[in-house]
Length: 125
Image 1 (tube, one colour):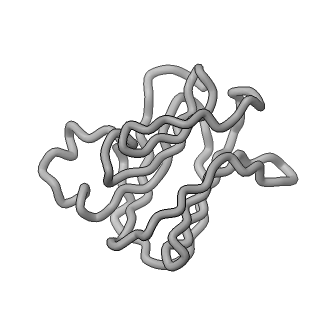
Image 2 (image 1 turned 180 degrees about the vertical axis):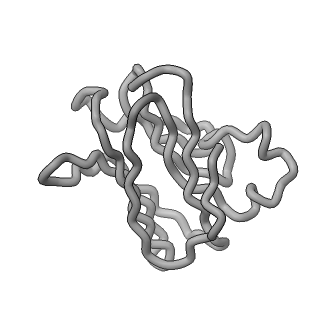
Image 3 (image 1 turned 135 degrees about the vertical axis):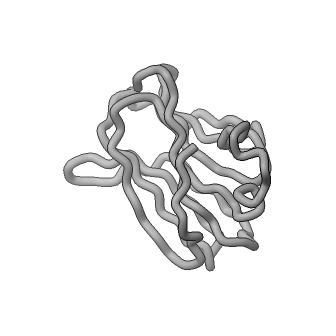
């Protein structure tokens, strides 16, 4: 897992170029403080939310709760994340040349700073 060094507390948007299977999302400060980051897997705990791009397509994952989010195909070159921490929303998008395609939004009362994170996988998307 690759983490941003700065925690986010306001509104932020970022994109990731996709060139393989990966998870993109956020990790709460509490998880970042734990000594188990070497064993950490995004989306399989209460402290992280992510969009997974894999051979199976797209799904979101939080606390082991998986939701398939797209039947639009698996190939994309960019994924977008919009965090509105004051409003308590985290949204994921497929980014095309002329539009954002909404995939999923979580509504959560975030109580701690959130850290953007990317987790690389072995298979391509």
